[in-house]
Image (spheres, rainbow, N blue to C red):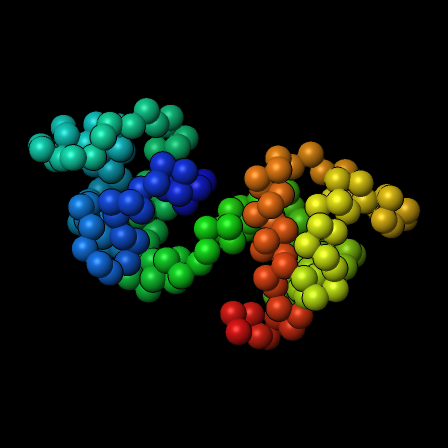
Length: 177
């Protein structure tokens, strides 16, 4: 949830997750070593009170969003932040959707998940780019015995999932090749 908020609010416009080209705001990978949770929570709502003269605009952040964002920032390390910086935004969104929708209860991706449904690795080589969405919206049309319920996933989220599935390698041992 914190990563999704970070992306939605375009925090990367001013902050790097890991070391990189300097930006207006501080690099976030080491915030947990410098600031307590309470400070972060106050900073998200009123940055100029926490850091006088801060150019960061105040945000209307729900407690849930602030908690998620604080948890995300506090878990960052130089190592995992660098890895997150390398992940395409659609893949991060797709990972959240995959988890929230419990796709792994029936499908395997990169060796993880259950095998009651087909593996998703290599779907881009087996199917057209339009097929995953069409199948997800009306599974029984494509597989009459399917137990997959029809999906009402919003179009933008579905696009992120389809882009992700199309990018999966056929063999999970070569993920990232």
